[in-house]
Length: 378
Image (tube, rainbow, N blue to C red):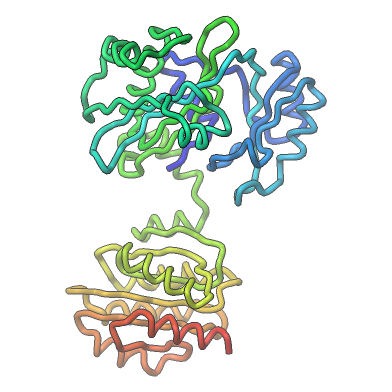
């Protein structure tokens, strides 16, 4: 789960970290009123779950209240980096002396928590990191308490200069504690600003939470719930993994690996997936019925592939679910079905006489995708 910047800052501020004064606006007039409260000079930011906003024009520095109104008007209702902008964050413009980058990252390759610091930050941080050796890295064992003296010693050993080491160490320890408490996969501050008075302020905050930890995070779980679309809510209730995409071919698979492979094969055939849907380990009539209705709901979907490898799951139940779903699916769109496993022959026989269902009885997904491509192009 990616937490929007306004909420991410709200959560980390509880740990005594400094953030700029500001509030969220949903209209240009609200943005102007907030900018006026902040003294006029402000920064207007599009609230979208994506990096790279600055380069895309989603962060605008405004010298006046009217400029903030215009900036909000140019952003609200716009699509930015594939996301609709419905809210903007208005923050007080801060007197910045320099910018840094800090990050707390769950490193799945090493099973450690990485503290990363670069004395350069901002929109070009990727290039800076690639071409500079001034990137500091400290690996911490998950669950360990990180004492501030350890971080101070690390920074001094790295010969960090022109920065208040005790202040930076304090920020890093608080960020580490926040990341641990929030079950964060990533807590990234870019930039961490050094103001002209020497204080450190989090100008931006990117927070990504491990979905598996939401049961321990009631506030975040509620944010996650309200952020879901109606279809995503239904998928959650079904117990399937579902990601809407912008294509026109519906996809149901049993297993993430099989799903990714199916999406790749669709792309190779020039087809564009409308979703990713993984049934997980359990396959039942009601689950398959609900999943097929879900993926066929959008009007732009021209056809679908159901690619199930059931193992010990009874494929006859999956076939019953497909038949039941057909009663509620509009149109004559083709659905290619490749299901293998327990009771596969019975399932094939049940589906053979169904209109718009095309059964593939071989192991290779390539055959199913090729058949679907042929059908949707005719």
